[in-house]
Image (cartoon, rainbow, N blue to C red; front, side, top):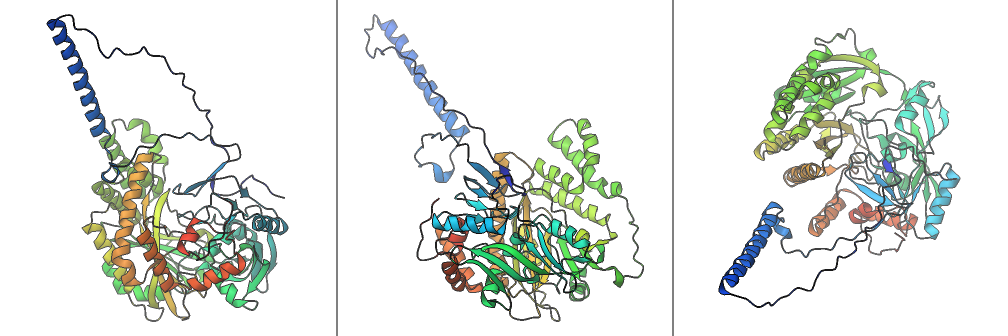
Length: 590
């Protein structure tokens, strides 16, 4: 049984408006008289002046058009293309990721309700050589799960199948969201070991991309998985674990959806517990003095670096039992904390507009991240304006210092703000006993690069840590138990729906990302998060990326298993094909 009613976070619009092509009836025109007798010299002069005027007018209009709407330098010699109208069919669906940065149109968006339905869907796709790419909640900034040829989404396979309270294990269908699972575990006194910033991911998706939380003693989330059930095109349904087919288990646990559709997952849980979150503002000098100690003594810790300031927001979380008498009462109230950024928004409205009165009530209702988005939308690529917004953010955090207590799933979340471009890299940072401090060197060089290149970089630059993973395709993969990894994310928000402005922000972001790539990645052995890696359009850049991935990951092994489990690449898409090209190209229906 399949349904097309999506219960997913994808921006999913079943139908787009369709307009019939307009038929233009040509208007007959009289045959022009190219030659006519001139009655007199006066008439001749008048005629010449008239046609000379027409000629000047024509040249002037052409010049005005050219300079008002100039081509880019690389487009001046491109041949004009005749507009082609193609009406959309009734069964064509538009699916985009959460940030609206990637979008596809597809006629196939399957949502099986049971394991048998999923098996039938994969079997049918294999028989008909038709792709059905696994897609989760659509939260990956790079649209890793999107495919115009077709997708399969497990949002309707969201049940908790079994809870073993004594072993602290839970078996779930892979379409269940993190938030749903956490709620279901409460009555059993259990929870997940760690969390990413948001809770709307499907379990299958969060595992396959190697997602992570923070805490130098805690591994990425895929390490919590102790067994999986995969539905594969070539070998049907396979169960894998550390004991049963361990080679495939450690490869497929972070398999990018290319080795099989993750149908069921058994996860190692922990006892439900409360955390004390302590947020305070520090600076680079103090961070260097205390970094090694903080990494070791805090269960969860992250730094939020604010470009063009010396402010670093430190957020550390520890079990409530470790605290004796934390001062829970904040020094400042919410309105005091927001005062600086509210004032900046009012001043900016006066600068960029005229009337603030109509917006006054709305300003007082906006959260910090909403105010930041609205401020950036006024002039997102003006470095001086972005600097003022960053300074207002630093003031906000200084007046938001303090403690709060809550259950771990509530405390470890983070309001990431609105739609955005993001690039996150992962690189080795030594061991827990001996951090190499390269994580702080990376940030120092990154901030210098931003200032030297006048990049309008908004805040924050988020820095987190994890222990290593045994999953072979994880960016934090390592065979050394004590290795730790740092994860650093840079962003540019997309706070507007204006297509031209979004395009300009996108171009600036990719310039920002390119500078970090060329200046930092090789030096620090940094590799991008699988959900945030963008495929280059340039062939030489793509070839360089493919070669670089081979140095870090077992690409040949991954492709060998792809051939064994999905020879016709039923579960693949353009991103996977370009990152991990196979020599033989199987034909599938698109």
